[in-house]
View 1 (cartoon, one colour):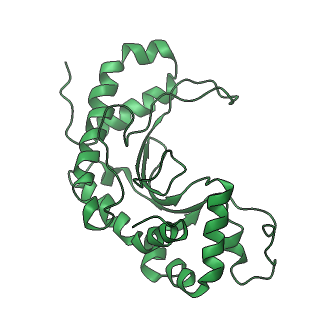
View 2: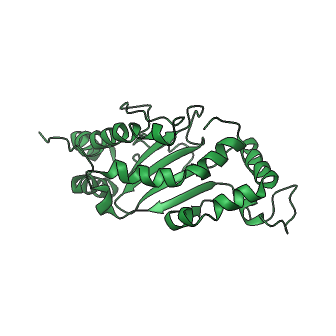
Length: 230
């Protein structure tokens, strides 16, 4: 029997790569113990370690290291509305979302680990229309505050803005607005790509939380826009 690693390792990446090549229920069933030992166990240990650090800069964000229903996202894909019917995700997804959030569309800190890419994310992905409107409203009411956060040298050194955008100005906004490129965003996400070697380090939770801390002003702006305590 394999002994679970206390942190992510080359075995984690090996499993994810093999899962991508054998994405079917029979293979996963035969290798379920490997998933538990090489993916879920280190993920839950990481969540616990990060959770000890979050109160220092983001006390309203939750680290929940339950096996199911917590910060570790399900390995099972929702294939109901997808042409891709492969049953399993080939990445590890971890979200530390705001205590008021009910799903992945809430403001959150995110970690993505796969054989193809690894990254840290801060922000809000695919927010509903009323949330999106509130963020845009906050940007236009406090353009200087938003611009200082968006253009902060340290933030831009660590993160790149990502996500989907409208092709034209959103309804009610002038296409010549100074912040039009950001107002067109449908996602407000900062992404920082990481080399796999960092993921395998014993202090990976500290590395990730250093990234999270840099994104604090960005996250605080989003929470303020949505009238959520930070």
